[in-house]
Length: 408
Image (cartoon, rainbow, N blue to C red; front, top):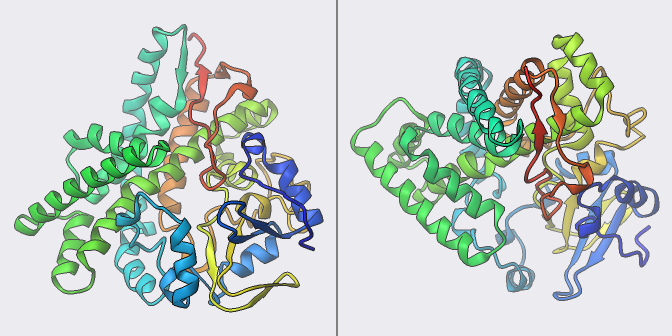
């Protein structure tokens, strides 16, 4: 059923809690066509687990406009102003064979062996941030913003070191990240984007003169060997360092929020710390850091859930909806740290499964585990209704999360 319903999960009134609407969409119009009132372009929102999973594997759905006929691609470009278009040539936005080539180059840096090797460093960074969190709280009546003091700086430090950027540059990297990903002013976004590109270009030239043991040095060597273009190299660094850290920020913030909103589950985790891995997986399912995957284009007329999506239309697989599909998850609206199995799609599926998923999980475990165990009187310092959520469904998390650490 598509009907004439105007169900918009991006509407501001649904940002804090999109799930009632997503349940309604799944029930009334699981393959729901929305037409933009300005451009007239059609987008199809998918809310059933089976449709989302199948779509993430379908070669007839692609991410590159160049794979569409010129007239269809032009219709999209007319309305798709992207202030960060200059850093989009990375695995997140490409289809095979370019996607396959780039992913093969980057994957070893985020494999199990590498993640295991950086675990101790992640724990050290968390240990270093928590005293700062405690100091910040002293001046504000023991209230601190988990996002600003822990969730935001942690992934910037960890990924910057993995890529190979100097520790002295972290403040600038955080500023560019905030401007490029957390503001909505296209002028500021573009300015920060060009500043970031200039910075990366300088680091590339440095690694060419003096290579090291970091990921950037390896990618520069691949560029010299013809395995990756300069534009792809810069775009890949953007994806890993800036775009990738938003997932971790939202995961940490959402995890702390849901544990505090479900005190019975928080108590269970404190009694059984071994549940931490399962807790992080349940957060990803219950209120994950990514609302939907990058929209894809129908490269041909394609049937999804009994509905034919015309060639050139946009398809939006909604991960938040799939992860609460009652056809797959018993009591989907229950937050249960012991849920098993937990076959969520929170980090995607198939060839576009998030490369940094293991690293994001590691950082979330370290940050959430430390907060839960070290601050036994941790509590929300505001009414959840007052929290400011990301303005669009794509990235799903709170901008600030004031909590009371409690006095020791």
